[in-house]
Each structure stands twice: as C-alpha cells, then as structure tokens.
Length: 224
Ligand SMILES: [Fe+2]
Ligand SMILES: [Fe+2]
Image (cartoon, rainbow, N blue to C red; front, side, top):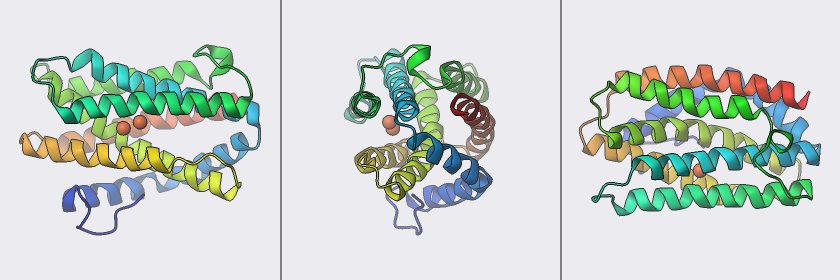
C-alpha cells in the first residue's frame, strides 16, 4: 500500500509519511503475517478476527456520528461515516460466512475484544491530550481518523496479501481503496485547515504503535 511517488492524491507529504510509517512498522510484519496465516487456516478463529474488524469499523463509524453532528457537516464527512458503516457490515457478512454461523459483538465471537476496544479508546484519549483541550471536535476527528487510517492501510494490505497467498476468496480491495481515500482526505483537509502539525502526527503515530503492539499480542494470545 506504499505510494511510491509524489503524484499520490495526498501529495508528497502523505507519500513521505506513508513511507516513514511502513519503515517504522517493518519489524511488526513477521509477527502480524504469522498471526494472519495461523488465523486464516482456522475458519472459526478467522471468523472471530473478521468479526473483531467489523466491531472496530463499527466503533469508527459510531465515533464519527457521535462527534460530527454540527449543522455544517459536509459531504466528505457524511461519505466517510457511510463508508465506515459499510465496512462494518461487509466485515460482519464475511465473518459469518467464514465462521458459518451468526456472530455477535460478544467475547465468544470476537478476538481479544477488551484490547480492541482499548486500542480505540486510548488512541482517542491521546488525540485529545496531544491537540489540547481547546481543539475543536473537527480537528480531533481528522487527526484520529488519519492516524487510524495509517494502520488500517498497513494492516489490510498485509491481510490482503496473506489471503491471496492462501487462495482465500475474501478480497479487501474495495475496503483498501476506500481507506486510502480516507487517508488522503484527512491529510488534505488538515492541511487546508492549517492544522496539520508534523510534531502532532509523529507523537500520535508513536502512541498508536504502542497501542497496536499491545493489540497484536492480545490477538496472538487469543489464537494461540
Ligand atoms: Fe474502514
Ligand atoms: Fe476509513
């Protein structure tokens, strides 16, 4: 999912940020890939992982709805919430198909649900803390979404690659395309608002990495 040149829609800033993100996440690739290989090989576990991704997508769309309800909400934000809600639906559908049974957002049907919820909540708290109390809900939404999208693209990219290698029928291409657009959009909108700070991005990405490593190890224990 690495954009290799400056012609990416988000421009050179985003291309560089993505390259830095990928380089900084390189050491997590083997563990993540091994987890995916193991999970994909066991349909019951795999269904629970996809259901957990559905939960995270659902939490994402819910978060946007809960914080973005001003009268001047724009098309881009409405489309964003619609697409995240669709990702939650898509993942749920794929999860139930894979597990061959209905799945709820309950512990028995999820992988490491406490860690998954904590990932989101702690990242949100870090965003508010980093931006300062007086930051508006729109800036917090744009930052939080942008940081999550870096990881989503990275993770879904590895996941798609692993599915393909396993000749699995599930394809994440549409989801990945939409996450890519979200990332471009968040970076562009933050820049247009004059609110994109490299220092904030660097510190939030570092925090996100810590939270993701914890989530990864919780997933790892759950499928052990
Ligand atoms: Fe999504
Ligand atoms: Fe997204």
